[in-house]
Amino acid sequence: MPENLNKVARVTLLFWLMKILATTLGETLGDQLSMSMGLGYATGIGITLVAFLAVLFLQVFRRNFYAPLYWAVIVGTTTLGTEISDFMDRSLGLGYLAGSAVLLSAMLSILAVWHKRLGGIRVYPVTLRSEELFYWAAILASNSLGTAFGDLLADDLGFTYLQGAMITAGVIGVVLVLHRFTKLNHVLLFWIAFIFTRPFGATFGDLLTKSTTAGGLDLGTLPATLVTAALLGMLIIVAHRQEIKEQAKASG
Image (cartoon, rainbow, N blue to C red; front, side):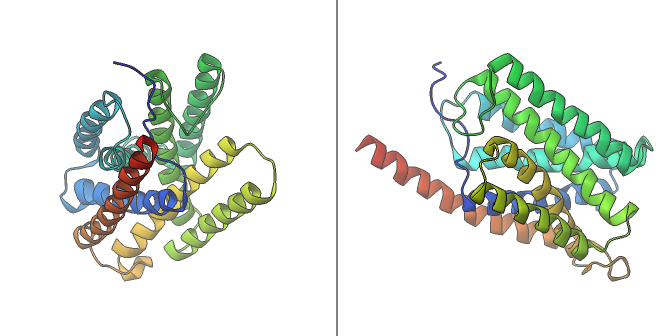
């Protein structure tokens, strides 16, 4: 099978909106499995890992970009990332600071090997299968790291979920300004933004689901998951229609 067609989403404003919703969905869905359903973190990792590998297999062996499948993998990484972070903190007892350090090391190692093996790092377009595997490995590591960092803000540093969301939104805003007005490496800025959109979405998910005494709105994980999934689904439809229009223009 030829490896010459792009496999990943174009980085636009719509991309970042969908990424934030995907991270919120991953947080609420992960909490639904491990806590609300009482399955525990190890079982939650097992379930989400199987689901992630299934959609990843379909994504990697598909010849071209398909928005619904791509975003299913993204949600898989955000959900699995939630379980990985919580397992490291609560089951292994590492704590969010040590867990964040471990996940940051993993993220940097993946990027370093990616750069060394392929001579550079691209986030769009991604055409080679080897390049795509590095892409998804980095995304999984970044989403796990973002989860741990968001929980570090709330649980270890004592910020409310709203304050945590505002802090991470501020970081994202700085990255946006740097992207717009400086010549800093855009790939580097992409990964910084990708990492920090995870705690932004995660803290927003916690704001929706946690009890009012913990600073949340106490909506419950299931309602929050369903609402977020519906919103993301609508944006996926929009992205898919845009994709079809772009393909029609290219072929015409």
